[in-house]
Structures are given as structure tokens and as C-alpha cells.
Length: 243
Image (tube, rainbow, N blue to C red; front, side, top):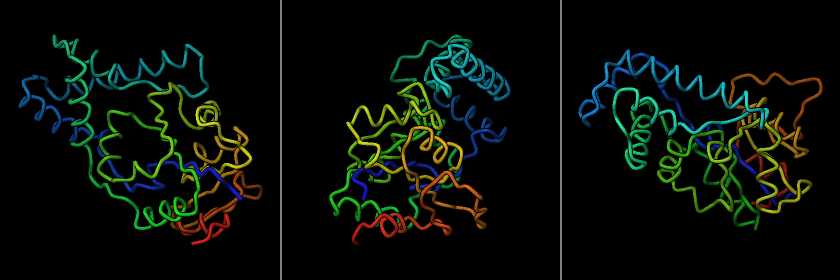
């Protein structure tokens, strides 16, 4: 039925929990920074980071290029460190961003059926794409750790594109870049707003992977398929892919 399968990453293929909004995390990160020769008090870094990130997001929204704009966290880091007298190279910025994410991780792994689902689609000759609301400097290292990069025929990360789900332009970029026929494409994700609503706005069928204990079935769902128990292999079964 479909030739192109477009996946969300976090909560769909990858089970993840981070702590990057807590004061305890910023204390750990400031301690790690001091070992790298960057001296910040955790409260100072926390206030700078949150304020500058907020301003970057507000500025991106004011520009009005996209309904749901995305920023690059590397720019936030460079401004935060510059405020404390540190001029970062691109390599340093990448290193600091990667470890910001690494230190924040509490839990990270593939869902048990992720590989079986991707492998089944690949063996059936389907094209597989990734559409992720994420920061490349955070996410690429995690993609490498999972080993799933070779499964994808194309990867779009929101920080690279300047917009994020549910913006229909993010979906359109994927389809235009890889010459996808929307009628032959389906979006698979675990978020009703970003994944399902975004796909609907872009005119793409959607498959809802319900990762919650209870499924609240809408009277008029915006998706064409659903796995009530969050089973990825249902993607193959319900879309007619032979296993």
C-alpha cells in the first residue's frame, strides 16, 4: 500500500528520558564544565542558558518564516559562553553540546521491536525516512549509538531545517527533498499534536503508536491507523507488509 515510511524518533523508535530542565542537572553540568576549564556557577549558567534559549526561540517566531520554527542550540551555547568571556570554536561548541546531552540522559535505548520493524520494512523493499524534532548536536551521537542510521533512506532533523513538527513545511521538505509521493507515504509517531496533526496538515496518512497505558480514542481521529498498545510491528501488519 505504501512505499515510504516516515518515522518519528523519540518515543517511537527510541525510549528516552532526560533531566536537562532540572537544577540538579545544571549543577552536574557546571561541575563537568569546570573540569574542562570553563568556570561557571551553576545558577549563572542556568539563568544564561534558559534566558538566551528563550530569546532565540522568540526571535525565530517573530521572523515568521515558519509556523513552528526551530533554533540551533549551538548558537545558544556560543552566546552563553561569550557572556562569560569564552570564544568557542565550532569543535568546542559541538563537544560542549554533546556532553550537555550525555550528562542529562537518565534512560536511553531502542524499544524492543524497533529493529524488527525497520528490518521488516527494509526487507520488503520499502523506503524509510526519519523526521525528528531534535538538535543535531544532541541527536546524531544517539543515532550512531543505536546503529539504526543505515536503515534510513533520508534523515531530517529540525535544527538543520529551521522548522519542526507539526509544521507542515517540515513534512513538505522531506517529501520534496526525497521526491516522495504523499499518497504513497505514511507518518509513524507517538505524538498526536506534532506527528499526527502535522502529517494531516501536510496531506500524509498517519499511524499513531500509542505509548500510554490508556488509549483515548477520538470521535474523529486525525490518523488512519493506530496501535493501541504501542506495538511497532503493527505498522507492518496494518499496512499490509509481509513479515
